[in-house]
Length: 237
Image: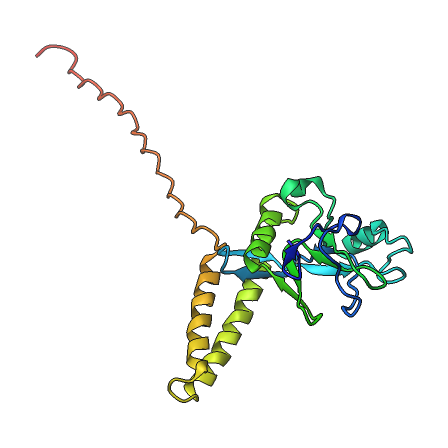
């Protein structure tokens, strides 16, 4: 929940009850989240590969947004370009996440919008600080996958991301090898090695069981022909 001067406030401008974001803060337009099939990352908070989300800003006249800020056309165009659109009004989001974009009471011109995973604090000096709850945000990204709103990660993209992480790990090892003992480079290397190892395990395809060799059918024995009775000599001695 957003905070203004240390007080919790309602998120609707018409129901504000604890002050407004000062006009000195830059306006923040409404938005919706979207993701692309290749945009994934490993998140250690949920120990899983989750989709990376991008904000599509709903400014009139920009990004296919009409003057009334109706995002319907933008939804369609983004989907035509291969994106999965996470519509704030999608009922699959459930009571917990539906309407994830919040409009804050704002004293300036325009709108001031944040996600439900962000907190806004205005200090006594009028400075505005916005912080994101990384744990709640990671759980939301995991939910999008579990609920079927976002399709599963293609194993080929996972392999590409792991190769990129391996290159990063190689560079960090090179930096650490040339760094002085006790340098932060060594701590960063250890942390990234741990991250890379966890990313390799997460979402890894289950090992295939070795196929059983088909049993050979038992050889059928040919029936033996009965032995012919010995011929007896005809006639007497």
